[in-house]
Length: 113
Length: 113
Image (cartoon, rainbow over all chains, first blue to last red; front, side):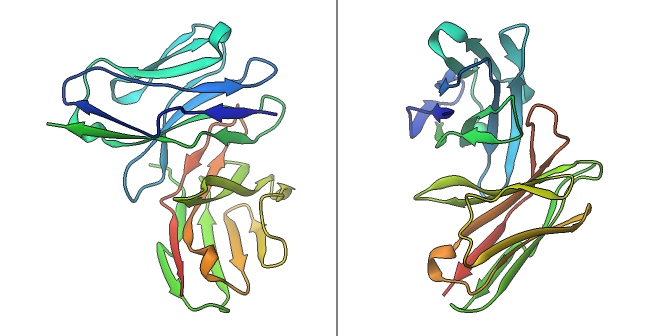
C-alpha cells in the first residue's frame, strides 16, 4: 500500500537560513509526488510536483524538490527562508492508477528572526 | 482567478443537528474530493467523485455522513446527526484528473457542541 512519511513533526530555522524538509514514500512504481503548503486558516496550496523526467523540480516561492528513487525520497528545499514561509508543509503521493492522493502527516515550519 | 469555494466558512451547531457543507469546484474539473483535518488525525480523505460519480467513500462513517454531487458545479457533504467528534475542518478539493493534482478550497470549520 502507498504511504508517505514525513519524519519531522516540526522544524525551526532562522530567517535567511536554508531549509530541507524530508519526505519518504512507499509505492510500487514511479509515483506522482507533490508538496503542498498550508498557511494558518487556509487550504492547501500546491508548491510543486513531480511526474517524470528531470528529478529536480522547481516550484513556486523559490522552493525545489529532488526525487531520489534509490532512497524513495522527495525532499523539499529552499536556499533562504523568509518569515512568510512559516506554515505547514505536506508531502503527498498520487496513485498513478487512479485519482487518490495520500498525504503525509505534515511538517510545521517555524521561522525565527 | 479560478478557485474552489466552500460554504459556510464556519459552522457551530449542537449535537444531533444536521450539517450540510457545500463546495463549488473549479469549472471544468471533473474530480472532487472531501477531506477532514484534525490535530489528532491529520488530513483524512472522506470521499471522492469523478464525473459526479462516487468512486470511493470508504473513509466516511456511513451511518451519519453522506456525500453527493447534484450537478457538476456543486458537491455536498452532509452529517446527520452531528456529534462532537465531528468537529474538524472539512476541505473540498477539485482536480482535472491529471496526475492527481488537486486544488483546495478554504475549508469549513465545524464545531459541534
